[in-house]
Image 1 (cartoon, rainbow, N blue to C red):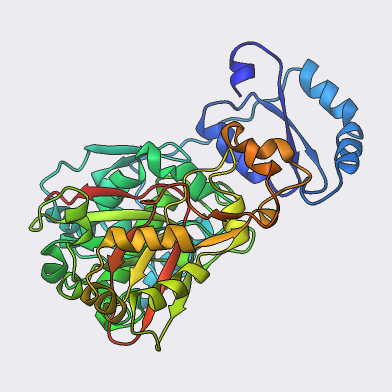
Image 2: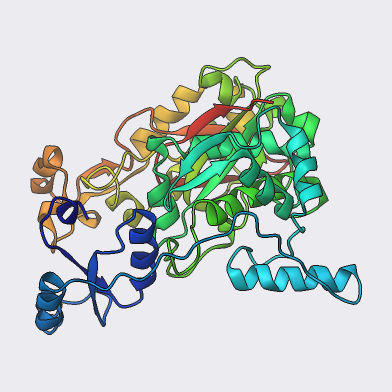
Length: 435
């Protein structure tokens, strides 16, 4: 795209199945004129020679794409004043018709939506002092304009109440920070999704669950569920992160529907997460973690910090997650999230350990053999500053994160020794929740 904008003829070579993301991407960037050629197989996990053969088989198509004027299809126009109406024998049937149509248009997540009528949207907007036309962010990956009103519409559809709107707005602001890398999170072929952690008095005010089953389901987590769901709908309907378009996820994951929880500050023996990040205890914040995946950490036996954290350390020794991390120039610093249940937090704190003690233990004990990280077909894939390490013996133990302090720690959950290890996909961002 950059070459073409500079007057250098260019063409995109697309693997079959990714033409949808190409279509949505170049339309979002205003580059409808950029030509493309689709080759049949996905160009991964096949030998380099076959990749070459597949591309050369389309040499004539490539030549035409580089030399002929592309046909530009008209950009579809939207009527902002269009009011959709749905009818039925009763309100229930009309609502079912609305849901079917919204799903056909791609606006839903598969669960029943609450109709975003003008009255319900106006009511949702009473939850904030911001103007309805205020632009919060330009949202990646589709460059949609996230106004307060558009966020409110998706909050209505998700089942939120007006007092939930400021939380969702703050989460959208957090995801727009460059360090969060929303484009990578939203547009990956993996199951990456935002995980929200709420801190401050607003947890109690809104009824956000920070105890048992904080990630749902159930009545205790209904606020968590609708807030997390609203964030996903905003990603879809404002950021254009639709399945098969900007979201080419290979398999998908239930974590993409909704992930929101409060920190159990009352059971936290240390300072709350947001205080650690520079906020006052009485401030309300939302932290958005780019979650790659998460694993249950079950330890019902250990009575010492070393025992509990050894279980955590073994859980974090995932070679694939490590190999696509700080060793790769296209990777990023890994900063996993340790979600400690109250029992595990108590055992560690009663022994006098601080959060930094936890981080140091994890750094020195969560390690994998260098041999499992080496990629023989891509020796140049290692970051230039770390290529020396590839000459070390395969049994050299290397950490799964780059720095001693690269672990986030929160306390969530109820009784019993079950915690959570969250593999990250970027940097966590904390934002204050404004009225």
